[in-house]
Length: 296
Image 1: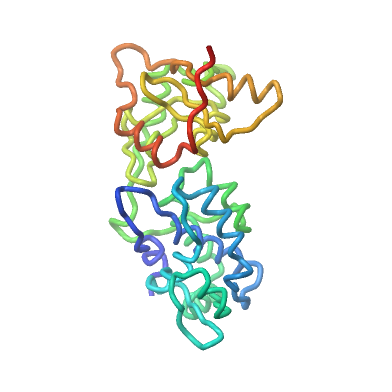
Image 2: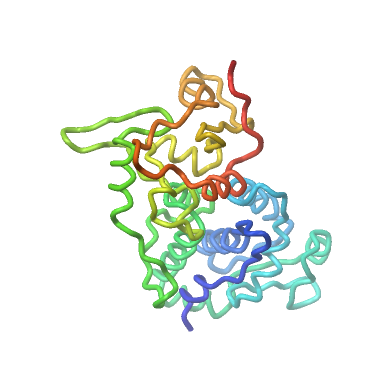
C-alpha cells in the first residue's frame, strides 16, 4: 500500500476556493502523537482544544470545528475512529463525538507500516507540509504538533508533486533590487544577499505559480509575518497590517504596526507587480481579520 500517495491525495472540501487544511492538520497532529506513544488513542474530548488551536493558527479565517476532520479523515483510509458503542464514527457533531467517547488514531495498517519503517513517518509529514503549507511555516508547525522538525524528503508518485522553478528566487530578488518590499532591508555579506527571500503571494503549496507577479522580495521576518497573515498587500499595493497583531515594544511598532498603509518598495519599473487575483487570494485566505487604519 502506498501511504505517500494516500497522504498526497487526501480528499478535501473545495467550496468557493477556500483552503481547507483540516485533514492535513489532524494527520500531522496524529503523526506527532504516534511518535510520542505508538499505541495511544486520541479521545476527541481530550484533544479538541489542541485541534481547535491548530485550525485557528494554521487554518482559514472562517470559523470551523475539529469534529469535521475527526470524522471525515476515516474516508481516506489513514484514520480509524471508535466509540463506546464500537467501531465507527458517530458523525461530525461535536456533542455526539463527546458523548460517545469517540477516540481516533492512525489506521491499523498504517501503524504497522510505521513500525516496520520508522522513516516513513517523516516522509508522510513532508508530503503533508509541502502540499498544504509554505516552507516558512514548516518548522514551527512541526514543533506545534510535536513532530521532529527534520522530516525527510519523500519519493512521491509521478504527477503527485509539482516541481519548483529554481529561477523564481533570483527573478524576484532582481525585480525588487534586493530590497525587502515592506521595510527596504537590503543586507549583504560580501556580494551575497542575506536574510532576503522570495515569498509566494498565493502559496506554492496551493497552486501558486512561480511567476514574478506572484512574488515578493521580503526579509526573513516579514516573510514569516506575511505567511502568518499578520501582513498583507491591499489596493494600490499598500501594506496591510492585521488589527489582531499585538506588539507593544518599539521594535514591534517600527517593524510591524508602522507599516500600515505604506506603499511597497518595488518592483522596479518595467517589471510585473503583484497580480490582483493573487493579492485577493492572500487577503481572503491568509490575512487575519481586518486591516489597521492607515495613520494620518
